[in-house]
Length: 123
Length: 191
Image (cartoon, rainbow over all chains, first blue to last red; front, side):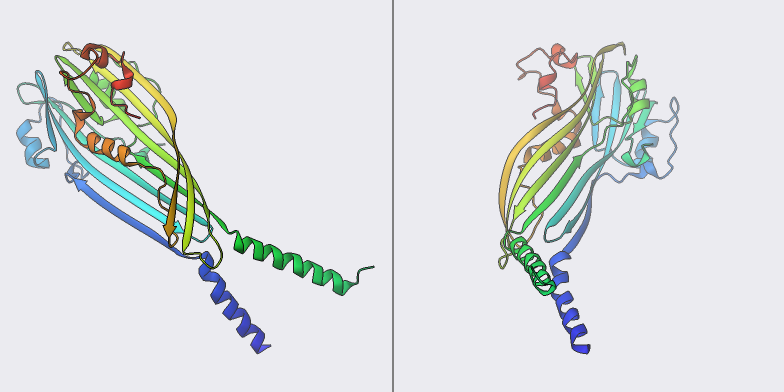
């Protein structure tokens, strides 16, 4: 009886690695730090360019929109995961762009702003 | 008349043969999903100003300024690549994979004139096959068999805003047509 259990254990030890090979998870981030998600408050019609710069630092890009100026901040995050088995493998890589977009009037006052809508916030 | 012992042996033989054949012709499957960006799933818009677009869709992927017109572009790409892998028992470190990928796009484009009035808009979802590919792998891996480098190039372009629109001086079509959405094919779509 004891030897049968030992045999089963050995068999299990040999078979299990065939089905459970490994898994992987990784994450990397690039671009501006998304401080705008930390509860920083801006007010349309009163916040100035200087205040935005002071709170968020230099933008990733500045766009000249004729009589307006756009500050464009970008944070990129790549999250990947994978499950590697013998007969079934799956992997997923999601690249998320988190942007903050500020439109200033020619006087340098905030006219409008928006952040990226995140998939995790979708209903 | 088969005996009970014969039945048992026959069943055992079938099971063993099935296991042996499965092992020899072992096939595997992989599912590789990639996603670049996200466009919120909101109803079609008829915005009267860029403020409405920002309120509904958030910060755009791309902003383009041409003359006195501006365009806001939202674009996400999801790629689904199922693969069939073949391996031979005893050499399971070697795997041959065949893949067939499909890219699903979600594209929204809104442009406005200097007075802030809407000039043109396009809202479109479409899917296009990326073709089939194959790969020979050493040790089991879930690797892409379809070349996704062009999507990574697009991602680089999305990083820096207005690169998706062509240089007005080099564009074959009128920039007015492009920015009014009449020439959708060259507004940031190389796929």
